[in-house]
Amino acid sequence: MTTPIPLCDAVSCVAAQCTATVCRGAGIASNNAMFTRASRAIPGGVNSSIRAFKSVGGTPYSVARAEGARVWDVEGNDLIDLVQSYGAIILGHAHPKVTEAIRVAAGDGTSYGAPTPREMKLAEAIAERVPSCERVRFMNSGTEATSTAVRLARGATGRKRIVTFHGNFHGATDALLAAGGSGLATLGLPGTAGVPEEAVANTWVLPYNVVPKLDNDVAAVFVEPVAANMGLVQPLPGFLEGLRAECDRVGALLVFDEVITGFRLGAGGAQAKYDVRPDLTCFGKVIGGGLPIGAVGGRADIMENLTPLGSVFHAGTLAGNPLATAAGLAALNELTDDVYMELLARARKASAILRDACADAGIHAQFPVVGTLVGMYFGNALGSAVPTNFEEAKTTDEAMYARVFHAMLSGGVALAPGAYEAVFVGLGHTDDVMDELASRTNAALRSLAI
Image 1 (cartoon, rainbow, N blue to C red):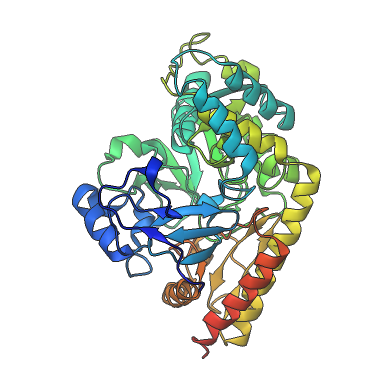
Image 2: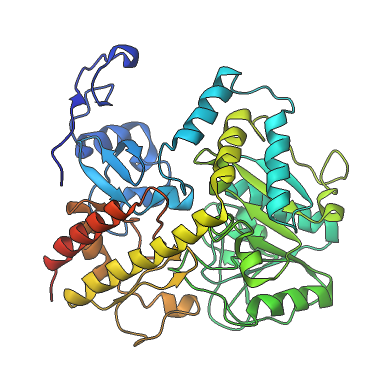
């Protein structure tokens, strides 16, 4: 850990007059104090459930600022960040091209409720890089994108049934928040309180990496082409191709949820990597350069079912807003072929660092790599194999992960506070940072040696 950086303790701090490196603004003295105060204003103290550390225990750290591959918490602790806003940050935190684009856009006004050149240009940039996206419609999150895709698929096909897969996560959309049990095909049951059975009555939850036999009631099949919410599980040969063929056979739509893989695996996303063309694609995270955004792209004849051309409603005052589209366009313009080659190398290096440090500490763990993504699996329930579906992924040793998570955090490395997330690296993880990551990781895990 480095020496804490200067912090502002002024209760009535005025940011414009503050000269501290990090401005607390309200005299927050520690992560514990921050969480306690936040819990009095925010349910559970967080605005996204995983941030509460329920699965790993302890009190969450609160980020005061970030730059490159690092975040600093309110106590001034310097952490090498392997979360990167769950994949949204590829260029590194506070990348100058992105922050400058946001600054210029903000100077022009933050929201108009009217069309802008920036949203047009970002839509063109996506369509140019992802050929399946002949038309693109923006919204404000990945969840809104999947929700819109469900409505669009049903409206375009005149069918009700939606197919998803065990362990895939498609955001907080009621129709997709179904929890399937065992068996070849399971009628969805609500996966959370507040979602009535009727909301998921037309949702089937099936085993990942098994091509199902569909019927003529299916409107769409939703799939993470690379599953990144149950650890990291890549599609087996023939799985995505089989889904494409089966959807074509019954006239259903194939929807790729590329909220994580889109523009992270490469300019064309997972569909380019595996050469399978979906009918619709959902985006988020990366296309906003770190700002909130989502999008649905797809075939023109399907997309034009959306209002005002068709009868499937979609609207939003902040959809395509000038800040997020400016940041997204700046980010995409930096993602060249050379950048992706560098990201591939860094993902492999991060995997090797984590693997070797665990091995030296006697911890059974695997860190599979799919392109620029790194997964985590703890324990030896699968021997030397890696998970290929949700049931296998669930055999990971969550208790061991919690121990590793806290050892790493104490040693200055931030992982996601959940055993089923991916590891994300970006351009901010320079060679020097990777060397420091290796040093910190080795030191942290030696304390857990078994």
